[in-house]
View 1 (cartoon, rainbow, N blue to C red):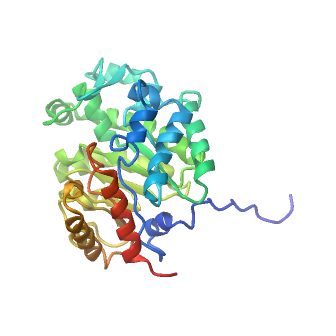
View 2: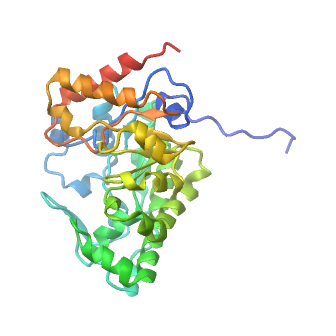
View 3: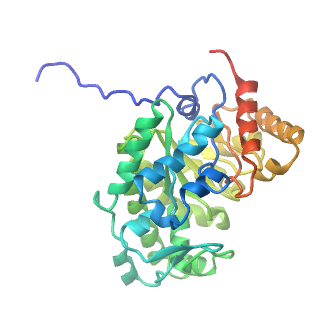
Amino acid sequence: MSGTQQTKPQHPAADSALVRACRREPVPHTPVWFMRQAGRALPEYHKARNGVPMLESCFMPELVTEITMQPVRRYGVDAAVYFSDIVVPLKAIGIDVEIKPGVGPVIAEPVRSLADLDRLRVPTPEDLTAIDAAVRLLTAELGATPLIGFGGAPFTLASYLIEGGPSKGHELTKAMMYGAPELFTALLDRIADITIAFLTTQIDAGAGAVQLFDSWVGAVAPEDYRRYVQPASAKVFAAVASRGVPRIHFGVGTGELLRDLGEAGADVVGVDWRVPLDEAARRVGPGKALQGNLDPAVLFAPPAALDAAVQRVLDQAAGLEGHVFNLGHGVPPNADPGQLARVVEYVHEHTRTGS
């Protein structure tokens, strides 16, 4: 060995507007992407997935690549988001789960006891071969456009596993949290390990950022979040920190949890539409970029009203350390793709710095 130090090559997307905004660095324009941009609102998505069940499609690398690329081609967004589902890593390790149309993920054998945790093993590289292959295909096609890796947060995955499917009140989940806290925290810790394997597979295959989706955590009070939930999410963020990609954290109805979500270890805190971005920045505190937060319902308003709503978000974001424009939740399935394209064009045009 000579005395020269080996340096890791820079990620192709390291200088992208998305990554720079996540790192709170100057950007040529505010980057835009949309949660659920790949999928239900696009006619080309329905054509590509015709006859293929949702979870089956998530293990077909060429199909995942096509679906993930569709909104990049159509909208000119600043990032692709890996087409997946929150329960994909559970399916990969053999959990009996299916996505029922009009219902969502349904678990055949819910978690009820400590013995049930034995079914929740950490996925091996062989379990995630299709995910690795899809990300490599995608990043080769995307080049300098970043791919955002997809992962479900421990609380939301735990809720599906405990309830057996989607739940409005999360009664069984909270009953375990309060009545069997050792089991509940052990479950979240096990899920954290599963999510870590899922995200690191995506990062190592080329993902330029990752987002942890905690769709249902808004159901938890701040004190309970800090006690029972935050440690597992923090474990996920800490495990991927050394890989050097920005980490985004998003939950729905989390206005009272924004500081706690940031303190779990994210570089970027996603904000839903209920809290203005300037107020969200005050709650989160310094040292974090923010993502959001156009109300998805505004996509159904006339173009002039949509423009005004987008501008209002940009005005609220004017003093932020870093801002990634997004919706405050996912793209509605019946949204007009033309309205989404209009949002991208408006944000790019009205935030371009010329640098």
